[in-house]
Amino acid sequence: MNSDVSAWLRIDPTSSVPPYEQLRVQILDAANDGSLPVGTRLPPVRTLAGHLGVAVNTVARAYRELEQAHIVVTRSRAGTVVAAAGDEARRKAAEGAAEYARLIKANGLTEEEAVSYLRAALRRR
Picture 1 (cartoon, one colour):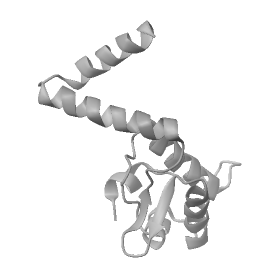
Picture 2 (cartoon, rainbow, N blue to C red):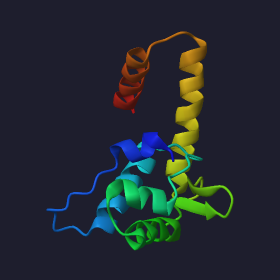
Picture 3 (spheres, rainbow, N blue to C red):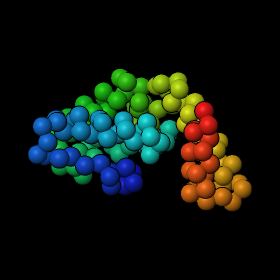
């Protein structure tokens, strides 16, 4: 089980939002903001269902809807992973971010410096 992923996924049983939708949105948001980079393996359906205390079908539906939206891809032996497909702009942004991160690390800069440079560049546009 990818404990990094399952550690922050939560289901609020008091919410009016169905559990599968809560799960789908959390994974979608994390994929879009880069918290779940392309290629990140999600926990198996049964494992995540047990961890969250929900039915297997709940997790399966969330994964299925994410797959239909091209956010994840399920491969028999590799499991379910965050897909490189989806919105082309987000894919390009993720690639650019990965390259920027390599540049920052190669030059010994801190995360705070990297974010500062990025914010400054975004303001200039």
